Image (cartoon, rainbow, N blue to C red; front, top):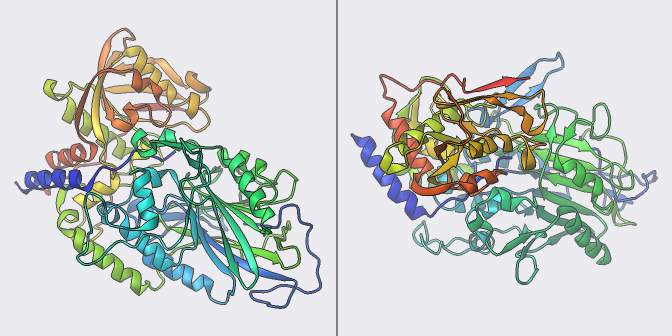
Length: 610
């Protein structure tokens, strides 16, 4: 849903940046064991009762950090909270200085506390981390005392070898070490990739599971990513790899752990769902267990073996804490903590020392649920020092102004299917590739998942309100994907539009952002491909001619059929252009000034019928 193509080498970024800068100078119900009977023991349980029959294990979890060490800008840095009176409150959230303090505070008083994550810790990261191949984020996670994480699709943005380097350490093979006298140490925690295997050997490329142990208490963790990773990462990122079914893989390793005497098992799954309400404190068990959530994770949760006691999930950037029955009908916790470090989940697992399993009951504990990483708490000093160190290294590139805006131009935070920032990005792409020698583009498409943030009017540093820095532009488009222009017939353009709402995207539509020349009506009262009103599609004000050839621009990820758009692959006469980031920055510089800032566009290209 939000996955996108890989980042390129730092060398390319620095070369492109130099050119740009030269130009710009002029609920969780307590999960309990698979199939274990509800407890009614006389011994009781507590935070650290060393002699009781049961003991509480605290599971702190989060997902989809995406290298957001600083508080995210705009709507990417807020969460919505349902109020008792029916209103909603928007709360600023996120930033690793606050996440560290939140987790450290939550751990106090808990003898048994585990911190786990469900993938996409790195990839699609803001400039401060992305410029240095996410070494700053791994360093921060080490300081956070993360115990374990699954891989996500974005862990493959730079390919298998780079993911292995993230785990094992060592300086970048091309860009070297970033700090004099310092060698990258790698992750102190295991990255789990149970369902990612080498095509030739069939063996997992990293550990499939790990076992956390303390004072005789053992909890196993199995980590998987979405089996659809090859569809949401460029081919180079997943070269030589095979992604297996999530349920079959988890079941396989749950049996293996069980044979080893590890009865308490948590699955870390980089796949997720969509709650019916976007507020972090929405009860997705209303009106029944798991009734308020849809998407792939629901089917997975219903099928995964009862040996697994809790599912920590991610990928969709949503927040939920649900109880979805396992195959035996027993309640089981399924959670996700939004994204970018804005929330963390606190789950109480009641561990039975005699059975070595987790006691699952239908009683919701007051000590479980999603918690806001608010910014009115103290900052963790070690994280502030880490951020200051890396920011200093990135500053010469990150802080250069590249444009001006008159108000927020929302991308990821837009509530509409057509995003204001999507309009800006696609117009930038057409303008750059319209000249005959550059591609002759007439139309541009942009995948919504590739727009990683908003352009916020409020200053993020000392640049001043309304100023767009190179670092902020990079945060919006961090992949440095190369642009392509191809010939597509009108029929193929129509096929692209239909693939937004059919095939792989029928259950969860992916509405592409389109340049100003393309207009059409999207009828959401209909189903599948019929949602695209074919007679409404116009190019430059004229009806789409299915037999005519159009020059279409898009990034290399979309042109390769990514995100469920195979029609792009049928295009011909490909011409490769500059990177999407360079195109975006050039447009911002050309179309804005301090005296005449860029205003948010009208978003009138897609007419929505509901």
